Image (cartoon, rainbow, N blue to C red; front, top):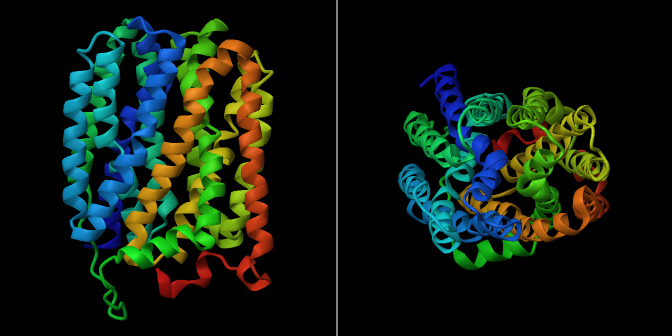
Length: 400
């Protein structure tokens, strides 16, 4: 398969894969509210779904590493997730909603991380820019936010889950469009299967651990945005379309950063990118604590390209450059479990009570999390030797 054909299929897959998340993140809280759940129950459901990544992502990622059947794991989980979301759309009452939501989150958790690990590793192998592929996932998210925001101006909030289920079907289609694994380079040495003991030592007692903590704090600082921002903006009088447009604008800046990712990675070491992302996140959440004007909030949403995209790029390329190939699926799953599961669920769970008590000023809590992450990232820079601090993507062709 040519590099162009590989890129086309991956771009198409990414273009379909995140539509459901583009609907779910902004509008799932509104659907839960329409089902009669309290603000605390809404935060609990969103947090519990997030926490399921702690189980689902590393479990299925480890299965993919141990069996070498990454595609089978991806597609099986995508199909199971669709069935669970379809069932969730018919549920009533907090206990039933919570139970089925957990199942949906469990199966969906490993799908995107495993695809991410595949794309960042193999894109470099065939000479493609990972960021130019990944931006289609962001555009997919943007389309989901905008289209669902427009539809929900004429549909009831109770119809949101049916929209999410339909969009998750596109994820199944996306997994079928994924290109096959490209052939290994002639100089590539076969790597032994993952061994539990050495894997634990690398994943939990190395520089990867420090980088993982900093990147995870960056990601988890978005928990309040993901869980209560739509409810907050709704209370400020913003329309469903206006809320969707805010999310879309944030994703547009994310797409821009991914489009420029090759230049960023070539000229900035991944450690510096992570520091920039955490600094941007700190500024963003402090501003969000006090902003009530629609256009000022839109300006702060433009920081999404910094607070999310730069940190994400740094972590993806750090894994590609520094993690052995037989551990990359597991490393990706561990990041998802820790950053998008354990920490993010904790922040999400706390967001409801904090917002109920402090209103918009609760965003100061997430600003503090980002600030702690920045301190850890700066420690990572100090820990590294001067030579390692200057290492960028282009300096490791042998690891591509």
